[in-house]
Length: 496
Ligand code: HEM
Image (tube, rainbow, N blue to C red; front, top):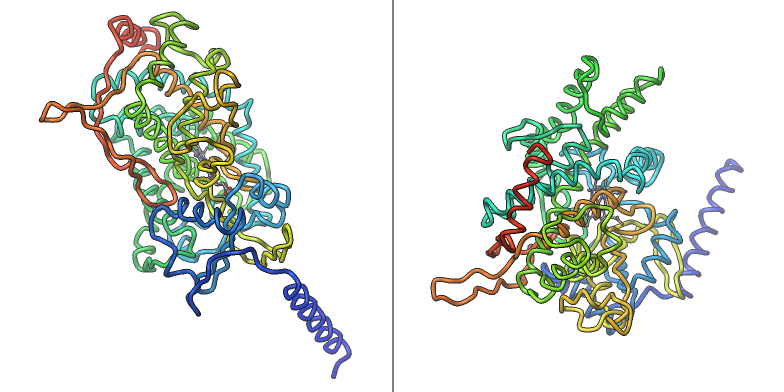
């Protein structure tokens, strides 16, 4: 036998034996007993998994080990464990599971689904460069204008607040991604993005890929043409506008310009910027809208918090003045309302699972290569060791003692480490300006039912990677005549 083959065989055997010995010495993280072969597939509930995992953590500790056929799951229930692994050891924990169906659907060059590697790093750079904290300040004007339009739309069509909020997030994203000022729902950029987003949401729905469920390749193939349109159409339009000198600066035009400066541009480079631009709407639209609907639900259920927010704005800004980004640091209670909206119920309760790339040992527990790492954001926000009465919406919890409880702002809602949400600054600014503007000028309250009694919405959420309150009704109207006048006066100021 060739000496090289013998040496290779010897190395493989040694590696295997060392792995077995290490495995034998170090146990998996604790977890409940599972069934033979199918592991925990039968006992993991289809809904409210975040809460279920959190309850398990009270018995088994912050890091839990579960299995489903072919998969090892490691659930992280505390911020500390998530930071220790996903952030401090991010090189090992920034991978994603490969899911062939996403690729069939055409989302193969999309950051959210890219495995760790050179292409992933390139896409992160494309995003990070355009969405730094500082750069996001240049979008404030767009967000401010859209927040004024949002108020007018909410006054005009309060019952349609869910679609009005969608319009708010869509308009901002269309502007930032494509430089597009959308004025109608029939705008081709909007319809194409919405159709493609539906396919994206389906992907994301199946993202964990550890949860039993099926999605057929045929259906996936059928949706590919929609995904292709959102990649190709905006690129062609912006490219043409750039040639004609009519393009408004945007994420896409910025990156096309950079490609034009480089003589070695490849097809892959072009696909990368098409994929990244498409990702902005798909990853940023529904998540931002969901967070705002969570805030509206909280205002309906906790009117005393809304009143406290209004009082602060009246005292700091004066009655009838609408908030601007420069006012953010002067409005601590409004900030607490925003942070509590992130904490009380999360738009992405289980984060987006990462995957481990090598065997690892954490606090005496063995985490095998290929584990699906679930950062249980919901559990982190419910943690009774950190938050008192965690199911209650209580913005004052964040105020320093003796005014409040001195509890920390949530940190998990934008994810962790090498995969942390690259759109977080843009998203946070959009949500803040909407929250502050609504509190300043409108009153959100319970509807009165046919029986003359107030209708209290249930706190029920849709199941999926993005989770938002199930449809509910509420009243939205100007706080008073001064607020109404302030909303109307914006029409001239912003030439709306
Ligand atoms: C309130 C709104 C938003 C929330 C709550 C949110 C939350 C998240 C979370 C939890 C993740 C997964 C992080 C992880 O894997 O650890 C994520 C990923 C991502 N988000 Fe956001 N996001 C929001 C808005 C946005 C916006 C506006 C954009 C676009 C500018 C965006 C772009 C992305 C992308 C591209 C990824 C994938 C990152 C990767 O896989 O490396 N998100 N987001």
